Length: 79
Image 1 (cartoon, rainbow, N blue to C red):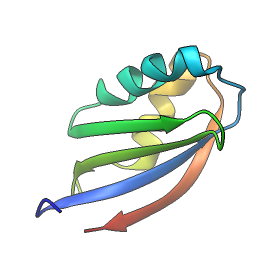
Image 2: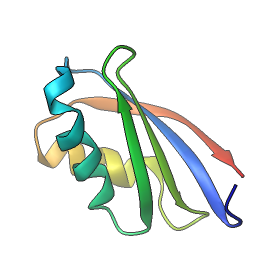
Image 3: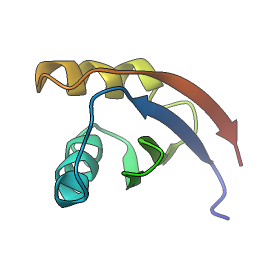
Image 4: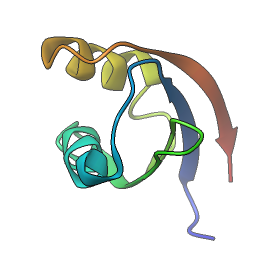
């Protein structure tokens, strides 16, 4: 685990086909301080790695809303 990182989980409410996985991940990575993102199209769960305390799930959700993608907060885990 990288020091000073946290994991943020976000539930994507809209159906996303497996072909859209990269798009979802790229949108998340476009938010400042997000280092990595991984989307599971089966569970619709986006897992984001970010610098601890520098980004909140609401920042990522706001970016998705700008793109017309509905989602809601999951949980944040400090590492």
